[in-house]
Length: 378
Image (cartoon, rainbow, N blue to C red):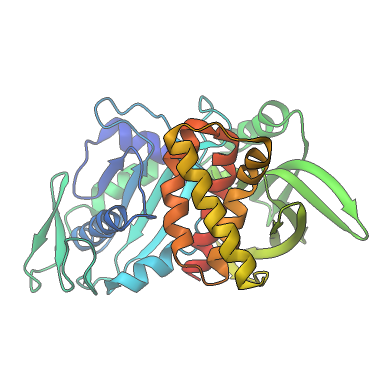
């Protein structure tokens, strides 16, 4: 069982970027250019490592390997994105790795890529890359190559050595549990559960009981053995169910117009633990978006656009405008879910504006964009 925090440290300590490892300050798959560059690197790393894992570490300064972190990135549908754009797509996973010195909500992203043994290529045009393009790694650079190039195994021993040095042990597991319960979440209700005598899941949050269900908010869930955050959100609520074999979270999102909000189940994620020391994570999108009158939404969409223009121009907002601004991310999301395709572009446009003028609303926007990604690639 690999401790992913140790794996990240070993990659940073012992290797510059090479044919099985890349590092990024951040990735941006919400934009066409960022999505294209990400797919290029995934394709190149898969083709350069047909028989072993390759990695992208996200949240690291390129010049000095300083770990600065990125926002928790909850995108269980990233495999669907890769499948949509690549022929012979590799298996891919994005994991959120906590580091003690990072502020709350910040993690290091670890993208793990496993080739299927065949040449991976772009399926269709995206940004400036043409469908049919094949990429390989030359040192730290992903370059286009001829399609009929031979796949070569040159990194297996190096990757096996790095992974071996990142193996977990009982001391790391116990330290991780104590740190989670007593230090990082001492102000929240926290619990842990051991599965199959070897897997430890810790979770923390504020609980409230509604009828026969207990809901958690400010939720943090971590698979301690591998130092991987399974879930993190300061806004959404979840329910948790488990027995001796599985651990299931059901995520709810609060949506509506104005102050008329309702909880909608978004996604169910189940981890099944096996006796042979392995586990399987399965996610199911169970979201049914609320439907609203198109004329009402058209008015709200235009009002949101007007609010953004006022912020861009530095025009002072009236109290009613500030109230509408607090709802802007959720109402843009509802507009998109009801067929207003331009709402997504406006949400992306709003990111730098809200970051500058309304940080709290910007945090809500991040959550809305996360939901949008889940729905889009499901």
